[in-house]
Image (cartoon, rainbow, N blue to C red):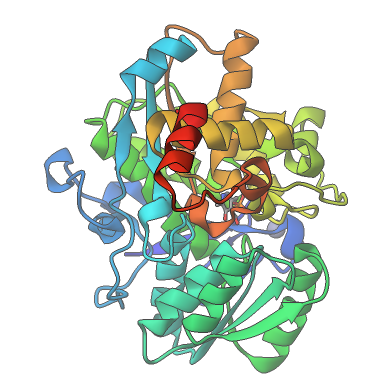
Amino acid sequence: MSYKLRCISCGAIYDPDEVEYTCPKCGPRKGTLEVVFNYDEIRVSREEFSPERDMFQFEKLLPLPKNYYKVPLRVGGTPLYDFPRVAEKLGVNRFLVKYDGVNPTASYKDRASALAIAKATEKGYETIYAASTGNAASSLAGLTASTPHLKSVIFVPAKAPRPKIVQIKVFGATLVPIDGSYDQAFDISMKIGDKMGWYSRNSAINPYLLEGKKTGAMEIAVQMGYKVPDYVLVGVGDGTVISGLYKGFYDMYKVGLIDEIPKIIGVQAEGADAVKRVFDKGEPFEPIDMEANTIADSISVGKPRDVIKACKYVKASGGFYVSVSDEEIIDAQIELASEMGVFAEPAGSAPYAGLKKLVESRRLGKDDTVAIVVTGNGLKDIRALEKRFEIVPVPPDEEKVLEYLQKSV
Ligand SMILES: Cc1ncc(COP(=O)(O)O)c(C=O)c1O
Ligand SMILES: [Zn+2]
């Protein structure tokens, strides 16, 4: 499909083969690019989409050539759960959970990786690299493992959760475990990737990642029969996932598939709330950096790379940002799991923590239909929970077991 690239800050328009990543005038931080379509050219109808199919059912709304490369693994088509009992308890009209923990590598990031791989293939690259807090990394490693013509090189903080690191290794990617923060891993990866001529799957830098990430929003719209929720909440680190959600609803609105765009609410950890701070200061949005400190490793970002889009898009939707403490994130993780059977990693439970806070302060209430996006599977990072749950072995003796049960049930 034909499309252009437009700088989010200065509005300059580029042909896709004119620039690879960001606006040369505005630089990599402020000059992130939007993919712009000519909506009049796109012919789609509600009937052609289904609640079950994978993310590439939206190919007519993706910046891909005719014979694009599609990874063999099934990405997207994840469930949207409805929990009326929880809605009643919270005091909202309807409560839904988009659960992306069931993607091939167990996070929302597979949507972006699948698109980045299609783009790398189209452009003829042999190696693709990413810096990541962990999920984008394990996702790229997994999806390139299913793609024989591409190799991946992955930069992550060495202290990323073990399951994510093991994923990268078992998928056979080249791992560069950086002795430093995600922000440092990102900066060094850019230098090396550039020098080696590899394709970048780095958040914000590559304009196509957001296009993959928008498919989650499109699925929500299809799964709700094109009557979108009033609010959609999601955890925010660099700001690409949240920008993608807005773009998904925006594209659908522009081609006439939905009548309105939900208000998008970004939820950040108190110890890594740079996007919220920039948003709250107001326009013109100026990026800020901070030292990130939260147990929610996936959103432990101090130098958010997609901050401009994340602020502009959330503002355009009529939404806002809220921050939550690590305690609230862990409590939300336990509540989602024990009351709904949905196991989220901390960054994935952050939106539930945010929702609870907003309901308590009456910013959201009984008239509102609310969806949260659980972006990562709980098995990705169990460190915080392990500390909460002490396991004391019971002897294999009938009386001792009965005694134990009396105390526990
Ligand atoms: C599970 C999970 N949730 C949320 C996010 C936040 O996405 P972004 O960094 O695009 O804001 C990430 C990013 O790593 C993630 O892995
Ligand atoms: Zn620019």
